[in-house]
Image: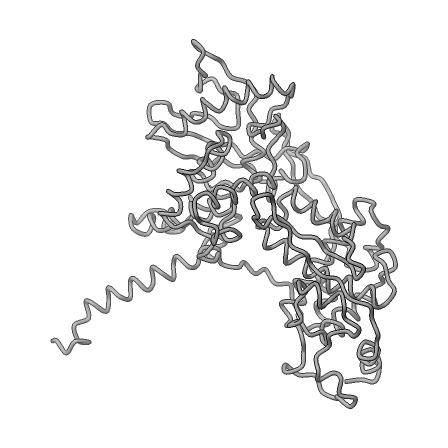
Length: 462
């Protein structure tokens, strides 16, 4: 270890402090975990982080609530670092990011959890790994490296997104171009007439910082879905039997039947429709949901990128596609017809006018945070409290894909998963295979069991 690094480590070892930041978990009126605050060393919420976490809540950023809790934990490391060095987001420089990622995260004791609020608010010294309190330490190895590389990469990514949010929203004058690599990217948007236009925007990369912690190439890693994120069959039945509100019965049935992303479903629009003897003429729907074949009960959902969509409803990859499903039980047809009548009444009562299909009880467009909370309430009413946090609105998509793959294996169709990739809006079938890797592992084990049964030599038979 060079002399300069030892001097920086010594600074943190000898530093006297007056507490550190911590994460405070929040519960709603039903005592269900509903969010987090980051609290400073004077037991005050950090306003800028609150605004960022609120932004993630309203846009559905990072998906499940537990993922956003991880963001709060990660930002605590950075807030502490800034506090110890008398920095603010406006004063942060490239060298500060380097010191944070290369040295501070190297020596900090990650076992001293960020949510231990009482202990952290009373700390007088920084919780540093004991090995760094040895004056003559010379070697850094895996035994004294602190946070692992993947954790550092995640933390750095979350810090970058936080600072970009502050800068782009004029909350703080952050010098993003100095801190990160500025990149020009482009997206194609399609208007109502079907015309595609190319739009340029700026993004920021962390590749240079990653090199300093041993990551020399950009990774395109797709993590397989955890089995805990998928509904079991009895859980699914129990959940749907406990949905009371009509808009959620339609929404969750739609997600379950199509594998749509929650943001795609919430962005669906209903422009107009006709009535016949007081009933909704579903064939006449001018909507993103259409009854494609009335005789065979085939429905089609149009996922359409729109240039005027709010950030939380932006379509991933700006990719237009169709998702198809069947409704032979007529359950969805009946639910949708009842819901459209309810929606019409509600919009008139609340004096609201817009085209979004899904609305809340105030007649406003339905948002992710409301869906997430309602889903937790349903899980609570279904006696599935232990599944809160694992099962999210995105779980319907994962459950749909799991059923598709298992049935395709059994029936011998869509072996390459081209059809499923198209239904889900994945960039390629390879992404689908890597995302739902666990299913193929199960199938592989089942195949091996069948081979073992047929292999009589294992039993001494000839």
